Length: 395
Image (cartoon, rainbow, N blue to C red; front, top):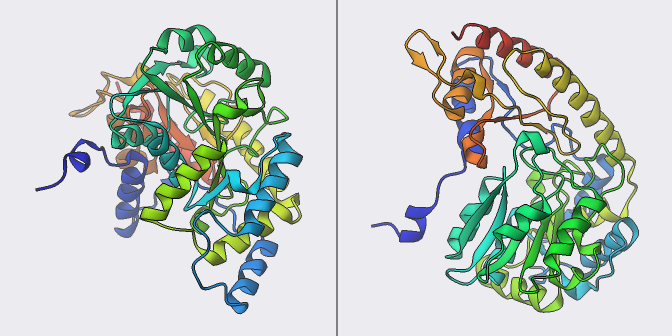
């Protein structure tokens, strides 16, 4: 009855775990949710005020498919001032979140049978989007011992005549890994030898960065015309529900994304676009305040996780995720419950410790699990206490 497309897609594991957590909460269980990838802060007041004005000024009609000119201009200015990248408004396409932007880019680039390189661990939706385009995901594994970042040699080995693109995410969901400018240049050196390969550069966590300036591969020599930069307001401005993302791309690709979007969603929410314009063009102090809070929480959760026997913990340099290796617990049991893999591990933590996390299987890294520390210091301390106690019961 259902289409072959729907049948070959997997449901989102992060949303599934969040749903399980919500069901337990509805039953009165005190669950600490470390499974959700969204800031726990409220949208800053000056951005909310812009949205209220937009309602009063009757921004209630369809916008252009690619977004209002004022928003696209604000994005052009942001890319110039913060990233040193020169775009025109015609190269910007605003969508219903960065998620749609990534999917637009994949659909605009990939033909059936073409390959897309996806470094693993990866965000759960990347491979599914490639499958939606009838493409072939090619996974390149980067473990905790290399800070979850692929090497130029690994990239070179993965490229074939059928390779159409690579999807890079820095800072990374799920690992918090950040590619430095030098590391991106080393990857760019490989890509310059393979002119058919495009880069989809997911930079949505740009401002949640603990190592200084953000680097974009679009700034590397020869890569500007083959890179689609993906970004938005969700993470930096605590605007996940406003659903505004953007891509900045070579003009033919921007036009292709607009063409696609015009057929299945048209332009994003008009009021949200006005709010996003204020986010990019208005005062930026809120971004740094939230970044500092995330950095403090990162240091807290890393310290507490390292106190738990059996977990291998690296130091994330961006985003708000910790991705410890938990495979030392595989094969252990509590009563008749055996931990076979990271999904079992995450379910055990939910049922026993009442802490929601996400198993690494969903991210292409079955030896690890993901915790989001986009929550209060108190929640982090209590969650790690519960996890430590629950894991001590395994034998």
